[in-house]
Length: 205
Image (cartoon, rainbow, N blue to C red; front, top):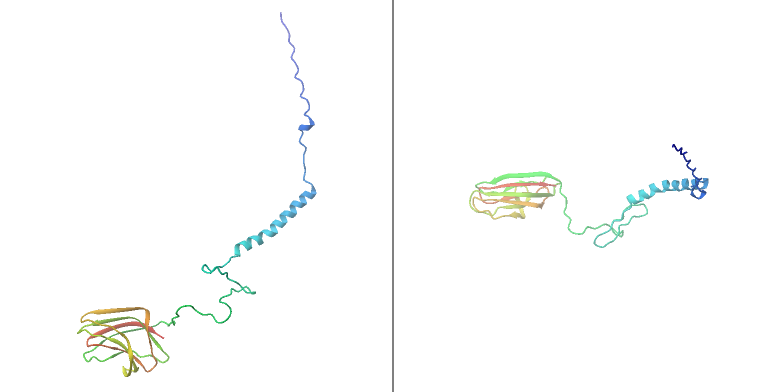
């Protein structure tokens, strides 16, 4: 016996409740205007803020914690503003580098040798090194200043001297130059025992 079973229809889904429907929300004209105004202010103010943050600085003395100041024109103030600036410590006069050197020796007669006659306008001889070489007996060679050219006239004093044993070379460097004050007509001379050699290097002004 054949039984015919008819198919069942599935019930149609019910319409979703209104509580589950999400309404579409739009931006009002007032809200859009507020956003545009806020972005405009941000673009205007950002470059100024970035510029100020990149250039402002404070200079502070690490010892006294005093801060540097500028005047109304923007110039940095230096000193206390009550008079000429002063320098703490010693100040050395700068000499122009007009190169000078001497190489010579004292002969058998032990006569002084002129190593520098200052030209007109020159007031200083600055010696940076001296090398003495003794080929005879021990001696005490000197660099001397005389009041006249040619190592004659009044003796104005020894500027440098050294004990030089026989057959020995003595070298002296002057990181701070040995400065001899001279005037035109004077002479800087080298004295010592016979057969004493001298090599001198420096500059003058």
